[in-house]
Structure formats: C-alpha cells, structure tokens
Length: 351
Image 1 (cartoon, rainbow, N blue to C red):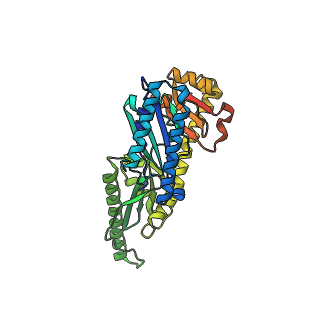
Image 2 (cartoon, helix red, strand yellow):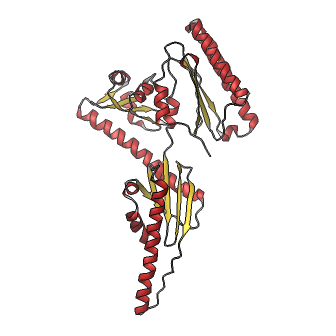
Image 3 (cartoon, rainbow, N blue to C red):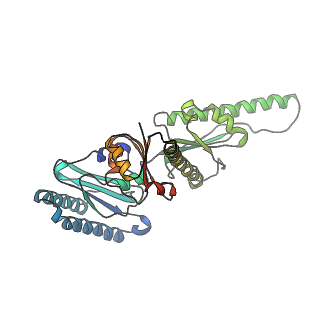
C-alpha cells in the first residue's frame, strides 16, 4: 500500500525543532515508480540524492563554524550508513524526506505518498514546505448498498480498500396482484429495510473509533434516502456525496475512480472556503487579513495567524514552520491565481 507518514502532529513537532546549536539537514528522495520503478533506477536516484547532500554541505563551508560543519558531516555519514546497511525502509513510498541534526537529537525519516523534487536544505529548522504541500492523509469511506448486499470501502484518498461485504436473504419483489400480494410485498419491504438497518449498524461499528473526514454512498435511487437516514448522526454529518455505481459488480478500481472525483471536489471546496474567508476579511477591512510577505511575517511573529495561504512554488522562509507551530491551518495552493494580487502569500488572522 502506498505510504504517507505525514501527520499534523509530526509536522508541528518538526516545525518547533530549532537546535540551540548546529543546523538541520533536510533532504528529499524522489521514488516515483513511473521513473524509479526498478532497482537500478532507484539506486541511481539514491546516489544522486547523497551526492547533492554532500555538495550542499561542502558549499556551506564558508557560512558555518567548525562545530556546525562537523555535526553536518556526521549527519550525512549517518544517512549514508543507514542507506548502505538497509536500515531505511522505503517500501510503498513515492518519496522520502529525511531530517537530521545531531545537536538536536533529530534523525527522522518520513515516507511520502508523492515524489518531491527539491534540493537539500541546510537551515536553522527542518524544511517542511514540501510536506505541507502533500498534506496528511485523510481517511475516506464509501458505502455501497442495495436491497440485499452491502460493501464498505475505506482508505486514504484514492486508495480505498474493501473492508466488509455481506448479503442478506431478501425475497425479490414481483407484480402478482391480490390481497396476498400486498401482504407479500410488505414482507419483502420489511426484509429490505432490515438489511438497510443492519448495513448502517455494521458501517458504524467499523467507523465509530476512527471517523473518516467524508463518507460517500452508492445506492439505488429508491433506497439512498432511507439508508442515509438510518446512519448514525456522527456518520450523517460526514456525508459528502453519492456514487452512481453498480453495488454488487463494481471493482475496487471502479469505486476508487468514482470516489476520487468527490474527494478532489471536497479538497477544492476547503480551499475555496479559505480563499473566500480571506477575500471577505480583506475586503471588509476588519484587520483580520494579512496580504503580502511582510504583513504575514509580522502576523506570524504576533501569533495571530489562523489560516496561512501560499502559492505552490513560493517558499517564504520559515512561514510554514511558524504557522504550524501556532496550530494554524496551512494551504499550499496549486493552479489557483487568487493569491497573485497578494504577492503569493496571505493569511486570515485570529484577531
């Protein structure tokens, strides 16, 4: 399964890491299987990463004191040693980030779900901007249900996996007339309702201890409202869309493909809401919006930032780290022109 070790807590802890002495070495490894799917190609990319890291340490010689340089060389040697002896596990990763600082007792390796193209960075803090752009994995679920079958899929983003599948013995409806037909039909409808109820209960049993950010439902049109109404309130408030899908015969890949469109739409909706909030505060002149790097940096120093918005590719030094350290929400936007007029960085403020 594709790996993603990013969590808000890990990002926050990295953002708060500021060695009293020495520097932090941040290196990134691209393991995109489309380019490095075979062992020789991966080995070449790993050697290239180590060479770039070595060059970065050499080039920083004039800017570092002796102790800082010695510590960085030791960090680099530790990275090289752990790669050579196979201590680092890259299984399932499309990218890897390594943060090392002997003086801070830091050596952290994170598997990433997306490749990262970035040169090594030597700085006072870990360089976490590429990780913020990827973001923590969000758990989504899809429930498929008809009159007799139910299927539950859950996973990170487009990597939904089937967790549960069951069927109940529900009689089929038919169109024979007469009083007996009415009684029979009520019986069939009761069986179908009981199946929907059981499906909702099984779904809650699976999800109650780890609620997803969004739930998608695939069901025949005549059943979907009834099923959603039977879901536990904790699940109903997470309903995020409906899938037009064959409940019994669709493949896992069919479910992932249809779900991904809703997940991407939900992600865009969060970004839209953040940008709309920025436009509202900025337009109203409430003083709760910062536009441009200088104003954003001042707000970060005053710990007033609630939402930080940055254009992808723009790397204001230390801004993301400071925002995460004060529990702000950070959005690194791709292909969104709305921030251009703000100098590619803006913030919504708490006060």
